[in-house]
Image (cartoon, rainbow, N blue to C red; front, side, top):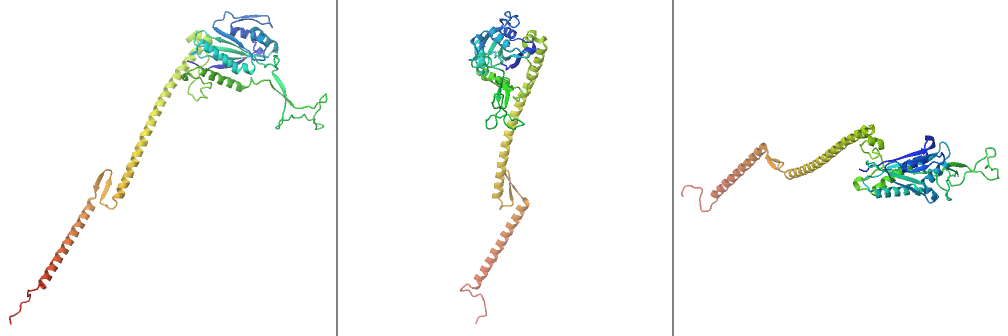
Length: 374
């Protein structure tokens, strides 16, 4: 599986290092150190699959020879604490063919280092142990337009907020100082000739390497230059093993540490998968709860409508889909109905009796009063 690895270090005299020895070892070549007369022969080194030197336009073409290039560097960097070269080491994706690996590194080196003015001497190592990687040695100085080495530092004028040079003021006369040749003196500061040593450069190189690899890798194999912490991943990073540890296998302490880390990461992955499953179940329960709340709200609205509709019949109450009756109210209603019927009957009988009496009293042809005959 493709892994991301990019480390940067400095090859310097203060560490007792040699640019010639470093270049010979990484390229697996035989080089002569003209400074000491020593021969650095690493032609017996195994696993060197490819080497290449890439030069910026300003550099002399003679620097395409490895021995010439790094001897020139050592001649220029004569101080005992001089920085001779910068080395960038990257892990190459095992999923790519050798041709694609070489093309990937070549383009990356050109865009990120050579186009910025550095000479790059890089070699690919692969011992078929699943750890193909590349050592990129870079020069520390820029080049002038004429091909000569530029200084590591340069003096520049200090500018005010309007972009004007700031004069040097004589504290006694309070006027601008005048130099020995009658020239006005301006404030200056020293700065590096290039920005290659800035810390943010390493972050750019790391990000660029991940993007370059991802152009060749499938979507499920994409690399990320950020640490697990910056990615907010609950995962422990493994440590770099190196060729010696890989050859020792389980006997190596580094290999044992990585095995323990991988086991811990496996457990973390299982816990993360279980957490994702629980979150899915929680979302499903939330959806069911929402549906139940909507259903309950609909039932409450129906019940309110039914109660409003039957508000004029207090003896009947609606409860769900069933109808219930209040016995006391029903009894009172029956008594009222019986009383009304009884009263109506009495009124009808009284009316009937009244009409019957009137008919007998005034019916023509009938003498209702019988008196003595005369």
